[in-house]
Image (cartoon, rainbow, N blue to C red; front, side, top):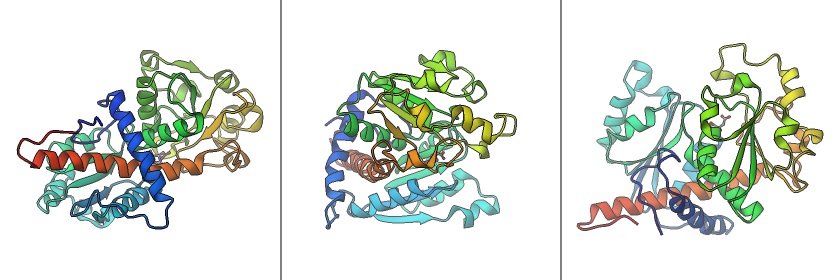
Length: 318
Ligand code: NCD
């Protein structure tokens, strides 16, 4: 097994063999999670603190379940109610928590780069649960595991990432991961929702959905991130759905066995037709949620092994 990281801050620093290590270990946790008795002891004795400065349903719940299944003491900080509201900075809050000796800190923050900054100030292993438009590594890893299980491989696939790319940390982390594993990635959406330097990303860019989906193995839809927009990005939701919303007709341009993904939360009738999202023959959206728990168990397990190795004299990273 190869995993040399002290933190999981993004996909960018990971080598392909480290990605494979996480996914392979996650497979064993998928099996465990399907048993009636779901406990393992990989995080026994360790303290995990979840700090979410932005709303989250899936990510926070799955990090909490993942930690509990592996035997950690898990604490969810209610950031809305914390001293942050009284003006304490992110770093002061982190240092206060650090003095309580947590081993794993799971952090979501609206500012890109905030989680990396925090990781420099604490002793715990830090996991990025989404920072601004920057990265959301565990989402890309759970997407990769879902794709690998559905397609039987994670290389030489054509993957169309569609919609609001510019505001999406999910798109960014997926792009990095899928590129490292040698897939063909296409970005599909209105030019107003493409990142500024899209030409430098080494991907194909389409503003026409039908062309962008032609022959794709995987269609990954993204939420329209209205909270990160300050107006003027799309004509209207109706027009957006008409041109870029995934419906049966547009999907018919992808391969017959193409899978449909969405990280959630979904805007039904805006970026995706509800019947496609619920179609168990095409949509793997529920599998993505299932894989999320397993991938987070694997990531925290590997980081904990490295923490233990670091604590032992002469210890080496796995
Ligand atoms: C994503 C996020 O928060 O970045 N959601 C998630 O983690 N499942 C995507 C989104 O908010 O649209």
